[in-house]
Image 1: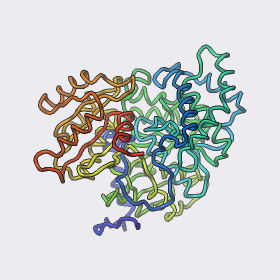
Image 2 (image 1 turned 135 degrees about the vertical axis):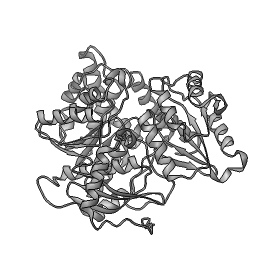
Image 3 (image 1 turned 90 degrees about the vertical axis):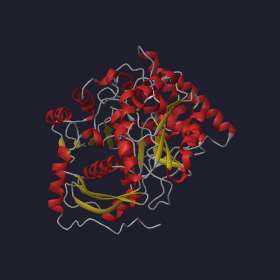
Image 4 (image 1 turned 180 degrees about the vertical axis):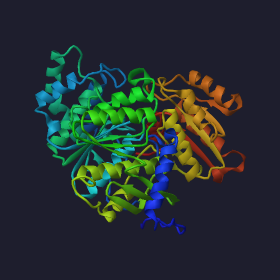
Length: 507
């Protein structure tokens, strides 16, 4: 299938003037409106190189499935991702006994509040299109734990995941005995990823932080490129209560002499990042100044972009993801790959535009404005904080012409739930509140009380079970002869989205 070619294109002949205009637009833009890891694709025929399974299913072989479940159970017995002792002491000790596998390849390190996973996927696609073998480490997963560790654009298979765990298990146990606290779930997974990348071996690793930066388990790599996606308030109990405080933690991934690709940020967060860059003699490229989105228009199955990178302008880039935030993620990803190749610094010129087009056309991002059924249309999006919800709402309104939209919302208890619901209130006709299976899930009655404050009692329905919530929302969407123009958005948590994906038959 060829790339969509909308007939009414922008005239980009005077590109320098156009870019000057968007510099001013970027500077004035409310950064919260362009953030998040939300955004994605509809069901479509994709061009470009295949990216493997969207989300892997359970292993078909019962013995392999049993072995994988055993590994998952052992990992689950460790500290979860929300219980932290902020230091890299334990992961550094593990890397030491493993022989420092994370130093066997160069890496691109990604932090920020929203947009990290989508940006990582774009970077991975670009590097792969230029014939580099990639490893990608992202979190959390949508359905399968194996999604977190990818090689060449696809999650590692269950057998390899099991092998990676068994390979490092004796060393994990050794470190456990030497430390005041055992290695956590996330620390062990990080060790598995770094060891698997070295074993592959990969040409470059694309690594997303779990939380923060300075003391995040991933921060034992010395990346030549540090990417900072938009920062907003999230995990305030651990990272800080202002964008500046949060930026202080996230700036910890910026290493001596690195190149920093800085997405549009709140002013106080940007100041912290720039100060850190000066301290370690890092070079900074800023969205809206050194790179950015020159032009963007909605296309069938996504959007058509003109991007300004560090080495010049790239026109007619089809991105099969929805929302302005994903266009900004694309600009960040492109500049990160240019920086990795030395474009704009060590060498002049730009990347091959046809290769860039092919790479972006292949990008997928499951659970980010992803259409999983039609009649009525059901969309999944993992927005879990107010900034993400605003970007999702904007992207949904732009790309879909729903006459009636029903929300299905299940959130974690440690989020700004009221802020998230307020972001969705203008676009939801009604909302069905529910609860996912996670121990972190907000109690459905507590969530309902907040929803009533935001939407009013008449617009809120309570369904404790997610399967019942989906059925109720679909029924509501089909009411009043609005079948053709109705839709359902399932959101609030990656876990809610992953469970809904399974219930709706996506594998």
